Length: 367
Ligand SMILES: Cc1ncc(COP(=O)(O)O)c(C=O)c1O
Image 1 (cartoon, rainbow, N blue to C red):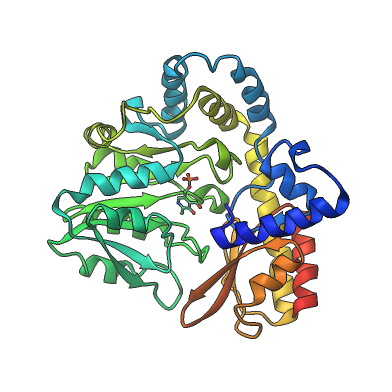
Image 2: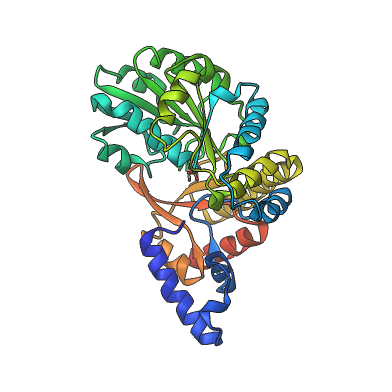
């Protein structure tokens, strides 16, 4: 989603545009359509510009009429499908309204003794404020020189005060990844001392195997997955934990009832998108093509960038400065400004190839 200041900017821009072209705002069905109608390209939240998948769209329409009942009848088959996808059991799955809910539940779960959470720096941190509100502090460990999680440093930083280690692999915002075997060894070691949270939001883009098998047999390891990225359902809010049944049971106590926060429409949409293999494959291929387009533009314009395996790329904008995002916004393109590694960076999400061409053209003009 656009952050608050970008949203405010957007409202200003859109109102002006809408007024300018003489269309009453209420004629636009959704905010998303309003963005599109205003010609705004959203490359700031790592969403999937192609989603929802054709099968998910069909399921959403069909599910509408079923929304008068609680979702129970649909939740169990959905969980069975997820479980068989990962070759685990239904008892190993807990659904949430996005993997954000799973991160939040885990933070509550480990917060009994307060203490701190070890996270990479930079890494995905939207949830950090929520963890802090549960009395946890955040201990950030810099990525190593190759800009991946410094697993040795993270392991040696675990103390009696450590409530959880959070690892995002591939990492947001760098798009880099730790080798799965190294991460597996790390998780096994770290879990002897603390709770290990592995965020696999972007593994499908990188073709990375999951650590689900490890999580189901170890009460101190949890793997989180989401339908918001390659499955193109960020707005449907569906994610899940894969973990040992005892861990799932403990986390579910912080929900009104287990799996409570996924609607009929969301469950059926996500379930259909799991079956839509050609959609997932095409999104993976298009993200790779979009990355290539960006990378050749960065190289031509001499922008430093971090090679990414995901649907976003971090590139250095020191030579333009923090005003870069405003300059992009003036061209109706939303990207994210980031302060990292002592410099100024921009994280750009991979949109459609057409959108990425517009981004590259805008970058050339600004550069
Ligand atoms: C690494 C990572 N984890 C989790 C999330 C949250 O995703 P959601 O709550 O939509 O599943 C995001 C969203 O950008 C993310 O980048």
